[in-house]
Image (cartoon, rainbow, N blue to C red; front, side):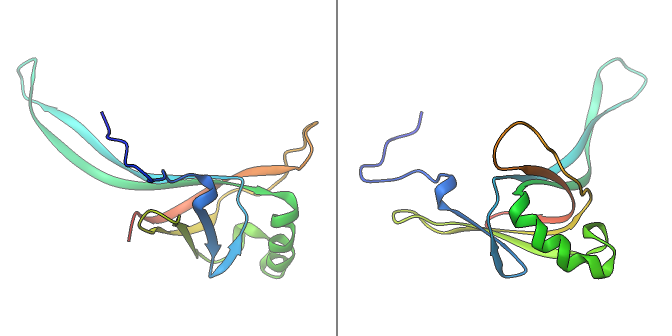
Length: 138
């Protein structure tokens, strides 16, 4: 069980700022991380005799409002759209008045483009990204 620190504040979404190639962008949500393959190794016996680690695969999904993605789409039109934009850096910085700054860096490319039109106000789309690197707390 965690100890409550007097006058301490937990990190929350209001503490996060996102930058794409150094330009601040408003995201509705972002999820990213690394996953590593792991397996049990068997011999002729029924039980595993060892285990192994395999490849590490980064991933990222981010939600962007339509009014924020439209300028990016316009800028990307000269290269054939978002799917053709070269890999770019995304930096997520978490900072509040009581805690240490946490900075994560990602190397991404758009893997999906399009629209999701619902009955809700404020159209947004959750973009599945092609993640090449996810570095946490660097």
